[in-house]
Length: 319
Image (tube, rainbow, N blue to C red):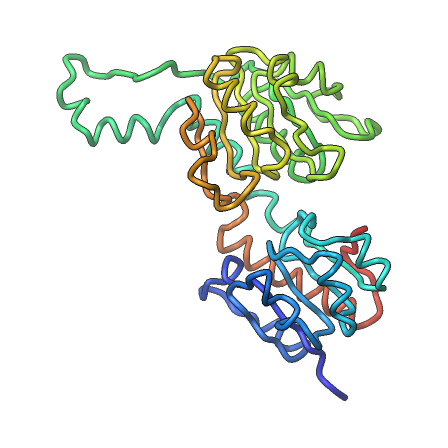
C-alpha cells in the first residue's frame, strides 16, 4: 500500500523545533517546509493528498492546480486562508482545529486588558529608567489605573473562546454581555445583547468571532463612536474584523480609551500601519495561541483530523 503524501507548507510557527511531527509521520510520508511563498505553493504541494497550512493561502486557483489533493488541514481555528467553496467544488475536505488554544487566548485577552488598565509593562520600564529611584514619594503611577470589578465586558462571538473569556471576566467580578448570531443558549452570569447595545454599554469589548464577509471591519468608525470614551477594545481573533484607520483615528481623538491587539489585518504589519503609532494601543505579534502546550495540542489534533480523513470519517470538517 502506497503511503499517503502529506505536505506541511508553513510548519515553523507551529513547531520551530521544540516539538515533534511524529504523530503525523506515522500516517504517511511527511514533508515539512518552514515557510512557503505564494509562487512555490503549487510546486511544493503537487502530488500531495493531504496539505497542511497555517497562514499560507490556498486560493481557488491553487486548489484547482492540485488534482491529487483530497484534504486540507488548517493548523489553526480560523480557516479564512482556504477558499472553502472552491475546495468543496473540487471534492477536497477542509478541517480545522477548534479547541486547542482556548485557555491561551482567554489568558492573552486579560494580559492585554491588564496592560491597558494596570500598565504593568509601562511602569516596569519607567522603574528601570530610574523614575522610582528619583521619586519623592514611596510610589507613583504614570496614567490612570482602572479597576475591573463592576465593569461590563462585552464579548462578540460566544463560542468556546468567548465563553472562556466570560468565565475569567466573572472571576474579576465583571458584568457580561455577549453577542452571537443565534441567541439560543443562555449566557451564564450575563445576558445576550445586540451589537449596538453591546458597543454602547460595554467598558471592554473583546472580539471572538470568525472573519467572514459579514464580519469584515465589524469595528469601524460608526461602532467606535457608540463606545464610551473610557472603554477598551481587545482583538485576539482576526485583524480584518477592525478598520485599522478608523481605530487609529478613534484612539487619537479619545473616542475610546485604548486598544489591545494580538492581530492585525496584514501580518507582519507594514511600517505605515497607523496603529503602530496610535495612542494607548498595545500590540503583541499574534502570540495568543502560541504556548508550547497549545502548539502540542494543535499538532495532535491535526494528526487526529488526518487519521479520521484517511479512515473515511469526518472530524472538524468546515464549510
